Image (cartoon, rainbow, N blue to C red):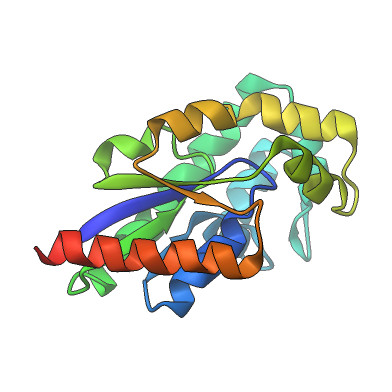
Length: 197
């Protein structure tokens, strides 16, 4: 089984592309979804997060606004949160790989793939990209998003141009849904041939 990483900066359309891969029958591990589960109501990480960031959790799990305010722009606090979250996500990822070990290839959907140096252990990296104006428009349409917050998030991420430079495969979402889906289908066929050969 070959393992490919799927990544892309905020607002690039990575979640939509991940869903397209799933529809093509490719197993996809969604690191973000796993974090939401672990931090949701009754999630396994709630006690540790509350102990480190008092008031950042409640009956519905993590209060993302409060936790975000505590870590955004504070590298030391962000590292403390990552020390809680990353090992738990790694355990879930191992379980996913065990469940799918008979598959030709799988995809790990990891937003901060380059930032956490996760790309080093993969057969290849797929980067999802879109024009900067489209990225900005998508992100600013999200509830509670501001230009200042958007800039802070982008500042923490590896620049899109750098991601594209380091990618093995690129999926463009600045086009129509049909064209993006066509790129995904072509890549699934390509990766299936590579792995099968």
